[in-house]
Structures are given as C-alpha cells and as structure tokens.
Length: 240
Image (cartoon, rainbow, N blue to C red):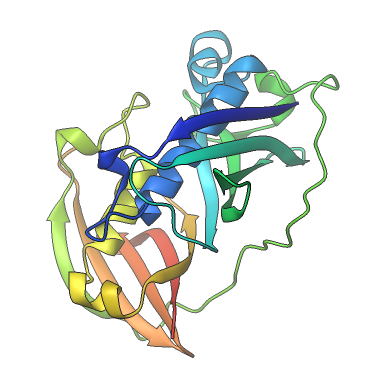
C-alpha cells in the first residue's frame, strides 16, 4: 500500500528562515507513517489495545534536497519499504507543488512488549502476509558513526510536553534537543542536509538527560545519555 497526502506547510513546521524545518520534515514522516499504519490496522493504538505492545522508532534518517516555504503545497508519499522478523522500514517522500523531491525519510520501527519490554516479532502485532513492502527508488542507508570523544554540552529535564501516548519521550523531542545545540546563525550559514538518529533506550517524564557533541570528518556527532546509558546517537551533516 502507498499512502499519498496533499497538504500545505503550516507555520509551526517552519524554522527561523520560514522554510520547512528538519523537525517539520520528521513531523510529516510521523504523521504519514502513523496514518499508513492505521490504514493497515497495525498502528500504535491498535498494537497497545489489541496486542499489549507499542511500536517504537529504532532508527530514522532524513535527507533534505530542496527547501519548501511556509504555506506552499507539498505531497507526502509513504510506504513500507522493508519487513524483517522484528522490524519494518517505512519510507516517506516529501515533494513540492511541482513534484520535485524535497526530502526523503526512512524510519525503522520495532514492537516492544508492554509487560516484558522485550522486542516482539512483527507477526505478533498484526504484520501478516497481506502486508507487502514496496520498492524504494532512493538509496538512503542508515549511517554508522563513532560517538567516542564527545564533550558534554548541556543537561535538560524531560517535561510533560515531550511525552507521547506511550508514556515515553517522543522521538521528535530528541531531534529538538539536538537542534537546540545550534544557534540561528550557525544554521543560516550551514543548513542541515542530513540527520541520522539511532534510538537506543526510552526516557520518561522528569528524567535528566545529558547531551554530548563532537565533530568527525565534517559531520556533527551527538549522543544523549541518561546517567551512563545511551538514549540516542545522532549524526548531522550540514552544507559546506
């Protein structure tokens, strides 16, 4: 199944330059994949109520090709690009009003059992043989990167507005935490072209998180930890 949505860029999806922000791109991906999974009856609410499980992001990646401005039309196209015994990949294309590819996102999801916290096979949460993957036309691969030798940047406390229906910190909040380590002028001079996030552990309301940052071969590398445990690892590529 391929889901297509036609929308306009809303003001809360834009950055300081009135362009669709990286968070806005991830917001489009989340809304598109959520609706797609709802159509397939494998959404998070169904997983929680019917199978006693929740879907969580394990990886996500964004590549930005072209800006889209506030109030401009865009089309998001979402589909499952890969199914393994314990994960699914959902790809989302974001195209402007003239069908130019402006952004491409890939999200890897897995299902966690609510009682044990262990990863479940996707076949136990409704992903059956009737659900087929579609071919991707974009070679977007998750990166591998080293998070050694990073320096502590800041600490923050997880608050109410960062918590989603599953009771943990929403995936987009970590992206905001990372982006908030930059200044407006830094991102004006060198806009973000790619973001690659690995989600390792969940966090919850009132948790204290520490953000670490470093640089490697032209890339910005991040890690967020709770105590001594990794929560996420992230790679950011900016334009030269």
